[in-house]
Image 1: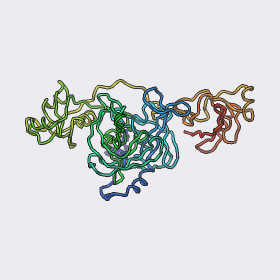
Image 2 (image 1 turned 135 degrees about the vertical axis):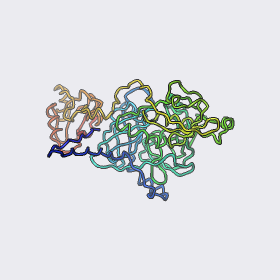
Image 3 (image 1 turned 135 degrees about the horizontal axis):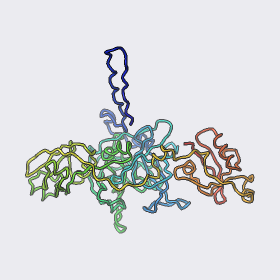
Image 4 (image 1 turned 45 degrees about the horizontal axis):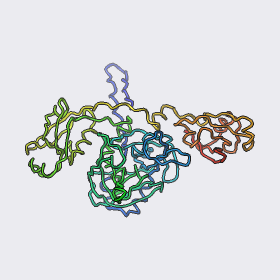
Length: 471
């Protein structure tokens, strides 16, 4: 964000400089429903009708050999998932694992329009990513709710694209809150900083639902569909799906939007959950809270007077239910912030205020193949700059009208890549114009009106039309 400096106006002697301009107020990244709106539950069919226009299909080509993405007819590994629009400017929330190492990223809207997308930011530990599409016009959005306020047993719907069945709606209830699940059992990241704190639902979630919204009876998103429990081959499970609480995502979205990442804070404790016997031994009324097993020397926790054996009950104004709660809120606090803690020590309540420090930086990773910075930096060329070679006469004579040029290069972020073109494809026509040379191709593309340019392509002996987009 650029700072706007006030310029002093020099007038008659004694005149004062104009006061500094107030800082610009940034519009909210997402919307919420007023308490008075949607106070009564809405029929599921009406909820689905309202929500589906803001749910999108996310698709791209995986650029590494990890994971188990299915392959398309051309042998490329395809990543398919779901997302939902949170801002009318085209800001989309999805899962990190849907877009991780994915190039040629595209988003298809409910009305059938399809756009190239880029990654504004992503966070692997929480499995949250933020995308952007440029639709040239305002888009429908889904409001975000409060996942801390959801209740077990309340109805929900999930919307997504399971196994490619687009815009599928499933219904169920909240089965559990604060569910801690080992991600390794769900074929997901099992690193120490991965968060495994979910809303559990029996609304059906399958492959392709990832990144889609879990919506309450008011029409608000309370979770981001992330995984399902398949069970054992001999004991298959049904109706056990998991969603990332939307409050966890909301803590990240502004940072992902502004800087592409969410730096972590460092507290310096090892915490464990409380069970009934430990709660009784420590004269605690319940098992809620995080029991500290150790405190690192020189850490922010030690500096604020926290000790092993303390039980942390709240982080600021947010209650701490388990040690996983403490891990999430401590690490996601903004470095440099000061947080008040409610602590129980020897059966007595005390307060401590901790000054959070930035955690050690992780090893830097390369730029995401679909990063928005690639587009902002001008890495995507104009469509008339497609790299082609002219065909030798003996080959062009075999093509319709003796025409055509072959594509010699397809950069990852390019108009040709977005259109699904490949090296070796032969461009026969642009609209009604036959193509024989590279100059004719550039002239025909440049002279075509509209943002979408129809081109006729030959691949492996078959002809097909595709659309080239002006970026």
